[in-house]
Image (cartoon, rainbow over all chains, first blue to last red; front, side, top):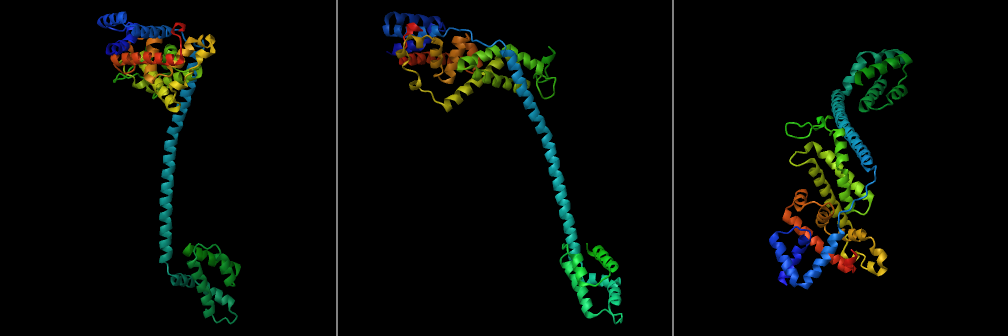
Length: 200
Length: 187
């Protein structure tokens, strides 16, 4: 039985003439005296015979069609690679631009905040008073004509400037000033201009 | 041939920077497509699958052409890529859909001789039930007529391993045909 197992392992190669001369002699001698292995050999020979090389049918135009199909795939691949090559520097540039813009914006904002917080409200008010706007307004607006800034009017302007500095981002500055003063159009424009020059 | 210029490392040089030369590549395809397609056509049931695998093989050739060193002939190199593509395909297919002995049409003989007329169909069905390496060895040895030495070189294996695979494959085919009740005289 052990001999049969060895012979059965060799039989496929025996059939296809891939054994050594010694192996061939051993197998042939065994087959002469073992009917079971002979039967086994017949089955393998039949299978081996059935697997004779036969020509595979290939469509006549297959080669040309294959070249075209491959070229299309390769062109698509190259186009994809080129897009990728273009995209990398583009995205990198965009990222750098965004980074620089963000840093610049943060820096500007920081400087602006420092400037605003460093500016005392009284100082700003005094600046405005110094340039004479409050005085002019007072003279023009006070019927008594004593030339002094009344406390209530002074406080009114002080409140206005406070409000402006406390709310520098407020877009209603102009309307607040308009509502809390009785400036002429010309004076109003000058005050606004001055305030904008001072704080914005 | 001007298309086969080589650089200092012995790699094939392309006319187009970064891409293999199209003219040279197309010539390789036309010269080798028949062998590659034939190999796959024996492995798979239809033209479409064989065509897909042939294209996959040549795309790999295209991608790696610049790295090809002339340690072997270009034909051997391409055929080796085809064989690896085939082994991977068979493994993927096996992983997706395991085909056991029980799934083979065991009752073919009950339907009479008409079903057995297509011996090659019967054989193909049985061969596809072998392991990927056994299938390839059978195809390369019995159908393509390659020697075990050539098969071993193509499959990155030894001659003895190729012989063992062949021997096991043939014995397994016998087992499959026995289960199918095939009369060997009809083969």
